[in-house]
Image (tube, rainbow, N blue to C red; front, side, top):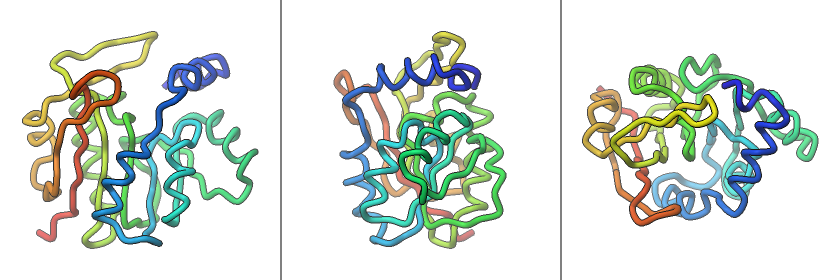
Length: 189
């Protein structure tokens, strides 16, 4: 994602995201995932959620932006980080949970379907996926970045049979019910 491949884009994102983190979402996740579980964060950005997750879980952060990874590693030299994209997830490692907060809206619905299939492959049996999305009916392109918005029914279709949906709900980030979170369990079938 070219926007995040420049210092300017990364700085701009950090400024826009000031004051926002996934603290409330991670509280929800804790009801489904025991402490000390391995968590793989997709699209960690500056690492706000990774820092929160690190308090209770064994975390691995990832991003497609080397700038985000380098900045985080400079402050946290012991961090376990991977450079990869959210669709192909090129790793042979396995995790108890795949987590993302407003990351998977940067890919198309078709790419999201592929990402879910790949997430299923890198999850341990009974693994959990926890993701948040912007809610809406139309895609937007802002400064060259795709923002794919979803309704619950559309997300359910994309998820398909590869996961059991444990919980899917609206929540408020900036405006009432502007977001959706979904908690999925790797299907045993």
